[in-house]
Length: 200
Image (cartoon, rainbow, N blue to C red; front, side, top):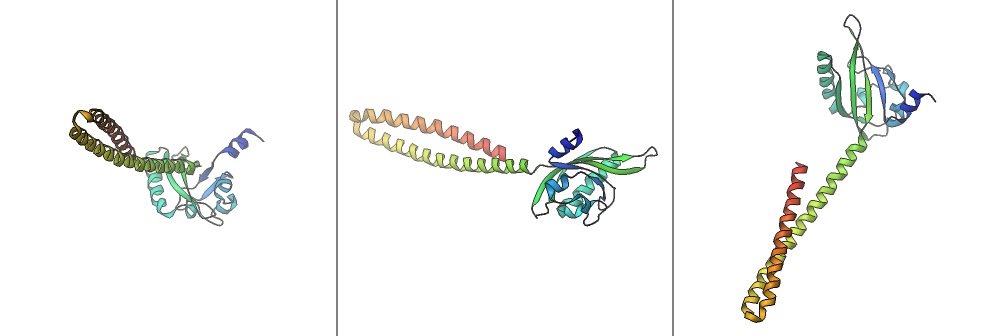
């Protein structure tokens, strides 16, 4: 196995060269399109069985057209994210980096670039968001418990005052309970605030 084949075989995506037409008619593609997305190369090359845009999530196609068109006008590369529908039916998030190739006369010959599967990255973000929601829920439970603890401390203080000198030890305990509840509540609120900022 040569160097290029080895690298392409490890790539979670594929390289392409296509026409700058409505369907982005594929001229060349590496076999990652089949390995990662389930479509044989010869089905898409030249639009033989399906077009490239037909395997994209249709709501993402206009955005692709806009980004590619703007980059070609400025003769710059583009990077964008969109979704490809796997042959089995589920959607996969990808990131594409590409650019136009021109001849000596300035005529656009074709587009080329790479398309990489980033679905695992989106899954990690979703998992982290879910973890943050769970933590936020636990923080709210802690705040509720601390409010109850503060109420108990107030009641303990009242009972200690009624008991006079006999309740002095109880009064100290009530004061410690209030201090603990207040400091713990501040920490819990700080965590909750940080989570809201991260989610926002």
